Image (cartoon, rainbow, N blue to C red; front, side, top):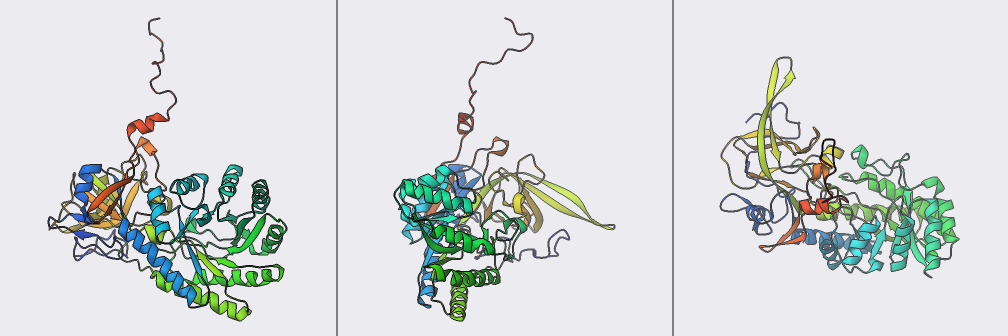
Length: 476
C-alpha cells in the first residue's frame, strides 16, 4: 500500500493494522478472541461499558515493573562504581494516592512540585523523609508545610529561597537538607518548550552564581547542603546532554568540596519514551550505565570520590503503562492540496475527549499512536487525524496515524503511552468532566481516581440554584 502524501516521513502504512507495537503499548496489551484490545487481562470494551469514555487506563503491573526495573538499573550501575543511587519518581507525570503507594512499594522516593502534590503524597502515608520538593516559586505556605512535616529535601531554585527555607527550618527547630538547582546551559535534544536548562529561562541558578549560593546555604545553620541538581529537559533519547551536564556540574562539585561536604549529585530526569512505532528510546539499563560511567570517569579525572547519585524519572515509569480510551463520534474526509497538481484526502476521526484529557499535542505538537480497540477490521488502513470535541482547531489527539477505513461512529479507539502528563495536565475546558483513572491487573479493574460528573463541575459555582434574575418585562 502506498503512503498518503500527507503522511509524515516517519509514518508508514501498517503491514498489520491490528498489531500493537510492544515498545509503545503496555506490556500486557493484547488482542482478545473477538479482536478487541485488553490491558491487564481486561477487555477495553468491558471498561468502556462499565466506566464510560473517555477513560484513562493504567496497567498497574506494568507501572510497578518499570519502577522496580529503574531502581534496579541505577542500583546496579551505582554499585559498579562504588556508590549508591536514589530514584525519585517525578510525581508531576501522574500522581494519586494509589500510584504514590506503588512507587514507594517498589523502592522509589517521590518528587513533588507543589503543595497539592505534597498533600497527595502525605495522604498516601508516604514518609516525608522520602519526599523531595521542587518548584521555581514555592509559596511561603508550601515551604512552611514541607519543612514542618519533615520533608527529606527541598530543591533551592533561587537566592530568595535560601532565606525562606532557612527561616522556616529555624521556626520548626530543624536542619533542612537542600539541593541547589543549577542552570547548566546544556541544550537537550528536545522540543523548545520542554527544554529547562538553558541560560534564559526560569529554572535554577547559573553556574557562575552557584558558589555564592552554596556559601549562603552553608552560612545558615538550619540548612544542610546535599549537593547540586540539574534537569536539562524532557522526552530526551540522546544521552549526550546528560553527560555534558554531569561534566559541568562535577567541575563545580569538585570546587565546592574545598568549602565542605558535597555528598550527592542529582542528575534529574527527562528520559524519553516511545510514543509512535518509529521512536527508539534507550533501555533504562543503558541510560543508567552511561550516566554512572560518565560520572565515574569525570570523578577520576578530577581526583574526587564518587558522590551519591539521585535521578528523577517519571515519564519512563508511568507513561508506557497508560492508555486512553475514546469512542468515535463522527468521521469526515477533507481534501487537502499537496501541490499545484495533487490533492490528497485526510480523514478526521472525532472522539469524545480531546485537549482537556491530553493537552500535549496542543502544547508541544506531540505525536501519538492510535488503534481500533473494539474489533478487528479487514478494511485497508487510511490516514487519519484523531480530533477532539473542543472548540479549538488545535484540539488534536493524534496528528497522524493509520486506522482501518471502516472505522465508524460507535467504535472504540485507544491511544497508548498516555500515562504521563495527560491526567496531570487535564482541564475542564468547555466544561467537560475529567475522566476516571482505572487501574487494571490480573483481569481485575478498579477506579483509582473517580471521574468527574456535571454535579462536580457545578459544585464550585457560587451561584448555582439562585433565583432567576429579573429582566425587563418581568412582572413585579
